[in-house]
Image 1: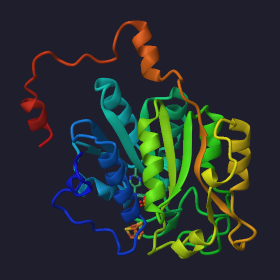
Image 2 (image 1 turned 180 degrees about the horizontal axis):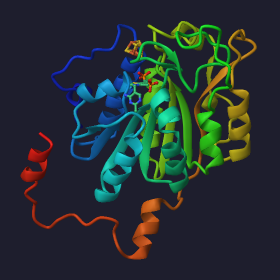
Image 3 (image 1 turned 60 degrees about the horizontal axis):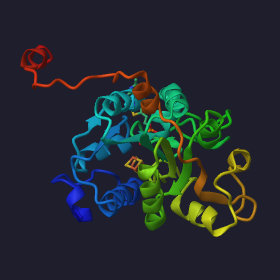
Length: 294
Ligand SMILES: Cc1ncc(C[n+]2csc(CCOP(=O)(O)OP(=O)(O)O)c2C)c(N)n1
Ligand code: SF4
């Protein structure tokens, strides 16, 4: 089994000290190691944002795409290389703003891949504007008087579109997050893990202490992961008010819902009898194409 440190490369992370991205980075490396994943068995596709800078700090033949467009790239990769474990890392601005329609359609297609959302409830890279998951009334540099909209509910949205695996994690609990990642990667179908990933520089509300006082683990309750309606209900109750006390709002983490033995998009394509893409029998010379873009 490759050791955790083997999943890094020579680059040192450039995230702010204490950023929640470190916890997600560590959990993913641990999950890949514990799943005994060889370096040619997985590939990671990133969107644009602080989360996307993780592309420089992990060992993979991956792709650092455009803002909000990681999923189309990842879908093509999965369909061209069906045996590859494809992992997407997206931000809340990236994936639930610009890329929201890709998210919805990927969920309903049940493409066999893993979607890890770095949900810091703020635009980190562009210095602290409100994001689609910022809490109602939260003040930020772009909303000095407070966010007017209700936040996007990624869990409820995914459930409404027929999600077959949806979980929520917290970057401050790396062992728990590692287990969620392992389950998501092993799931056959589109597996979403929305991770509360505090941005210590710009989000002064959803901080590590704020979450530590409130998170609880679903698996430590009598939670039934096969009840879609209950999961949807819980996702609606999980919306938090900015000023709520730890007693008033507790934040569930863990697997909300999972459904195994489902048909994936790839299964459907296979049933047609023709693959979407054929891999060339001989390597092709693409140097002229590359030269065109130099
Ligand atoms: C099409 C397009 N629009 C806007 C931007 C500018 N931009 C870069 S990152 C970003 C938001 C980053 O926030 P998020 O996705 O939450 O990621 P984080 O930095 O918090 O990890 C924006 C708006 C861009 N790169 N491309
Ligand atoms: S700005 Fe926020 S999300 Fe970006 S690296 Fe710094 S702490 Fe992390």
